[in-house]
Image 1 (cartoon, helix red, strand yellow):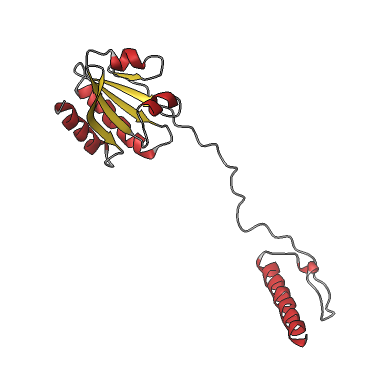
Image 2 (image 1 turned 45 degrees about the horizontal axis):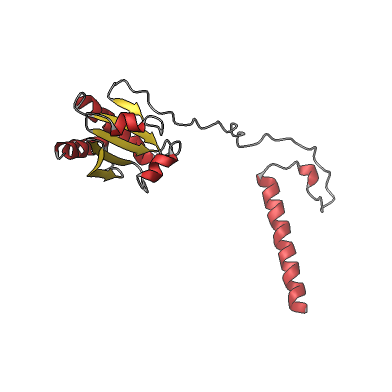
Length: 181
């Protein structure tokens, strides 16, 4: 019993010491502190806060897909997928992506550059997996970005899942896959 009593007294002393040291560090007015020497209490001094108040949080903008300056790049939806991909006379690169995906932001410029460089020979269709979940399910998309080439209305074995880390490497890979069709 005495051990607990001593331990509690020790803790109380620690807490008191901590409060006293913190109060001087954070500029608590001196009149609040105990005056155990019966000295005249000094006039309270109000100190300013040493650290500035942080600015209020700002809203993080939601990434917006880049508008396509190239006529060979279109957004794919369940409504236009048959027309844009399966019935296309050109080979089609379908890029399954999400706006929140960091690797998709690396692949996007690569796909746009690929469409610009190969314009007239290939079409690029971008499919947002969040907005078009039926299409991503139909093609068993389990990782993004996923790039699949279609030729004569059929899915080919020429595919990329993920990104190589730079748009240049991704574009080079897309060109190689396209040349292998």
